[in-house]
Each structure stands twice: as structure tokens, then as C-alpha cells.
Image 1 (cartoon, rainbow, N blue to C red):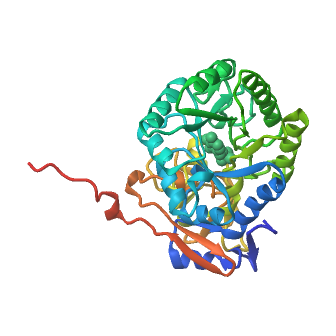
Image 2 (cartoon, rainbow, N blue to C red):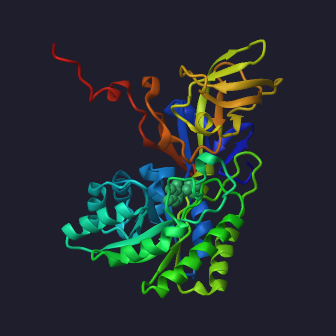
Image 3 (cartoon, rainbow, N blue to C red):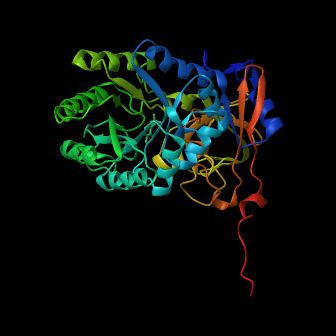
Length: 420
Ligand SMILES: *Cc1c(COP(=O)(O)O)cnc(C)c1O
């Protein structure tokens, strides 16, 4: 973690110039901490590689939708990729522009389509024929034309976890490759749709470039057929999905990844088209940690448990995908390490954050769960009536609360009991 935003100074974990121990003291735990510098650097890695090329970055909002995080990207001129009208509202509230926003997702409602069309989103990434009909109807009722791209399922193996692989035939996402040409013809025939692009998203936490090259090859083959059918495809959206280092993964460097794809598309004779990237995890994942305090140490015959105040409701990825997150002490101790399962207080055996971790810790110590910036807070819930964590953004020597900790009374404010 040496040149990263999260690093040790004199044995104490810091986020940029701020001690994580002081953040926990000031804001309490569990606490999500983001680094503005890490967000900025990750975005620049994409944007710099796109500079001077026909390519744009659309931040996948679902990976981390905190307004302050989105605002950091909006200030740098980012576009956005949304999957609900709620995310559109967040983008607009954070200073992003609908004109730079693409709307993805397999189940957009008519009301969501209407809102997005009225706001003026750049493109609807449509995933089925019934959705094309629905969008055409909504656009007709507004007297508009909706810009559309079809999410094509290129049927490539992204070589990642089955829950986060989305580009295979067996998957709910996208239009099957074999049906795509005919589906484009149908879209073209609808009076209130304007076919403008093609998109795919083959999965997440992908650590190789080759599945992307395979997907792009299939997309470009289709583009040539579609154009020979009389449509013009202005942009090719390659989706998101680039992986990050949680443990010992070695994903491609972001700049190399972007350049390799753009060069490949150019070499295939499609350099005139605009290329869209939709990164989520690779922008925010390693820009955040989750701070938690050790409540109890519970030694056992087979296992020792470190019971902490964060749980699966705060960070669902371990329970959901058996995902690995590094767990490190906030203040290093000069003591013998023991092996622990780091678990939360929720009443589920699946409530664990890390297994078999060598840690030198005592009751009351602080731990940092690393790489928690993506699919962390956004997936958190109130299970066990646990208020959701606070979120803080560090910027140099300063730290700012960017989401207040929830209070219990907020959790049932909308509920009521029967009158008799
Ligand atoms: C989730 C998603 C992304 C972002 O994926 P990451 O793995 O976080 O980069 C991009 N595009 C679409 C359509 C998505 O569903």
C-alpha cells in the first residue's frame, strides 16, 4: 500500500494525510472512508488514455453512488452509466449531465424511460425486443425520438466469478448474438427510436484483456452487418468490468487496457466510431476502505473469531460472492499474531468479512477492510435493524462527512401499526 492513498505512517494507517484512527474517533465505526486522490488518479488513468482519441468514460454509478464520489467525477468531466431513475437523480444532484449519461439495465420501467427521456439522456442501452417496443411507445407519447443502442451478448467467457460474469448465453443480460441483426432491423423500423450505437458488458472483476478483444471482434462483425442493412452505428460501448487487486490479482494497467482496445478497434478499420467505456470497480474499488472496531475476541477449539462492529449488511461481498478483502490493523501492534475469522454481529453464519486472517489484535482495536470502495456501501442494507454506516471523503489533510450515519428511528419512520 506504499504509494497508494492508504498507507502507514509510523505504524498508523492513513488515508492521504489523515490518520484512520482519528477518523474512527471523530466519526465512529463502521465507517467508509474514500480518498479523493485515489478517485482522481483512477479516473485520469482512463481519461488520459482516451485523450485525443474518439473515446469517452462513463462512470458506472452502481459501484458507488455517493454524491460526493459522483461529484468528484463530474467535476473532471466524466459521463455516467446508470441503471435506474434513482441513479439518474443522483447524477443530476451531483452535478453530472444527462446529456453525458447512458441508461443501462435489463428491466427499465416505462416511468423510468419517461424520466430519462425528458431529462435528455445520451443513449438507452436496450436489452430486449419488448423493451424496444416499450421505449418506442414512451418516446411517441412525448413526441420524441429515443437514442438507442442494443446490449449484445457476445457469448465470451470473461473468466470471472459466475455471479459477476454477464456475457455468456446462459445469462439474463443482453440480446443473443445470433438474434442481434434482426433485432436491430426491428429497432430501425420503429418510428420513435433512433439507432445510434451498440454495447456489451461481459462481466466484472476481469483481469485479462483477451475477453474484451474477443467481444469487440464480435461486436464489430455485427456493426458491419447492421450498417449494410442501412443503419449507422456511431458508437461502440465496450462496457465496464476491469478488475482490481484485492489480494494478488494482476489486472492490466488501466491505460494499457484502454489503449489496447482503442488500437484494436482502429486496426479493424473502425477508428471513426466513438468508443465508450463504463468502468465502475476499477475507478472506486481501491479508493475506499471500511473501518471497523473489534468488539470481542472469541477463541475456540477449531477457530478463533474476531467479532467486529461491521457486518454483512455493511459489506455484502464476502457473504454474497465469497469475495476476498484484505483486512489490516489501523494501528500496528508489536505482538504475536493469531489466526482469526473476522465476523460481524449479524445472526447468520454467512456473516463473515474475512477467514483465516493472521492478526495481532486486542479487543477495542480498529481494523480496515481494504478495497471496499466498489459495491460496498451501495449494497448495504438494514438487516437486523442496523443503521447504515457513515461515509467520509478525505482530501489531502482534510476529511469531510459525505453521508451521515443512519439513526435507528429513521429505519422505521415509514412504518405504522394497525389501528385496532
Ligand atoms: C455493473 C456495470 C458496469 C460496471 O462494472 P464494473 O465491473 O464495476 O466495472 C458497467 N456497465 C454495465 C452495463 C454494468 O451493469
